Length: 451
Image 1 (cartoon, rainbow, N blue to C red):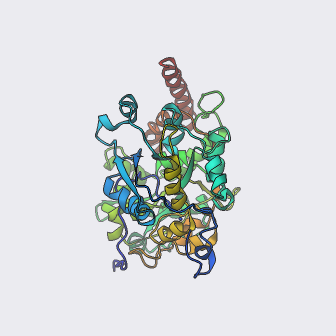
Image 2: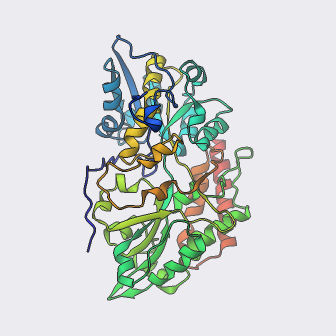
Image 3: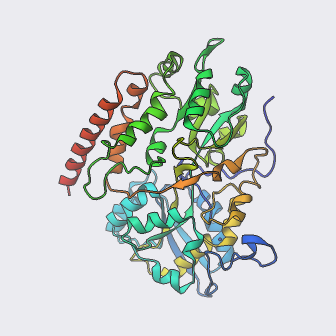
């Protein structure tokens, strides 16, 4: 029987990148734990809202809708600080609203937010960087209260400065379709599985049943490359050359794409999809994919999870790296250098990273950026999902986040474009990595020549 989910409806925010949902909030002293000390943890002391009305211009790099912005950020900030209002800019499908054109037009942005995948490319490229360190010290924000890798990644990518604070977070987990497991009579996965165990389990599903082709395990290619547990950058930040000669890339691809697709049944599934790897559609829509490794926020941004009898376990680990999961994938909020309302903009950010806000939105399924266990214990408790193993989100330790470059997207594309042929055994690992390295380096040189 399909499990029915009850409770408060989850917020579906289609604008946030399938990338990056996480949570972030001074609070009351009437409750114990982090919520009780929230005015001191991360958020520090606040000067209180100014009586002077101010309009902050917000730029949504992910292309969120204004509705989702208000639901997640705007309304809570306005409730806390009634003098603050927002002018919201969404560049999606609107060239005039894209950064280069706004800069030419002289538009001033007060709040800029983007996931880590693009933040360290666009912020310096458009000269938006502004070091928040003085404001952080002035307002007594405790950086040690954040998940360490989120702050380390910021400092490592900005020469030691703090261009933004993490407000959302994300990582990777393994989902499984309980109906498919029940159909095949296979015991459910468990937290703490290794990749060897998960792959062995997956082989039981790579077959055709009653004319329907099933697949056992699929891993999101882009996300596993960006968030790989080996902390491999795709481009070396010092040389601007691809890193695909590193032997660990071979281990990663062998584990994520070669071994799961070893059987003819899996290859038949790829061919039946028109030479595509099984992905989101096969997990929640056609429901013929048993296990799916992707970001942990999917149940809260993809409504098809509401009609899928799913559960989750922790991201599988390599046996020689016990307890090390994927990298984190935070979204940072920044104040561009030319903002005329830096104090007010920082006041808004300070609230979003305070314990009060963090606690409230962790309950709604937004992964907290503060490390105290109390924020994790309440995760997703006020969503429609019951009896889902959300503790799996926090079981593993985050892998360190490597430095980002302007050319990561180029290198990533050079590798992902070959993964279907690799899975179908039309090519071998050495050839894939050699070609990816050559293509990436050539395209990077071409791009560099344009500047």
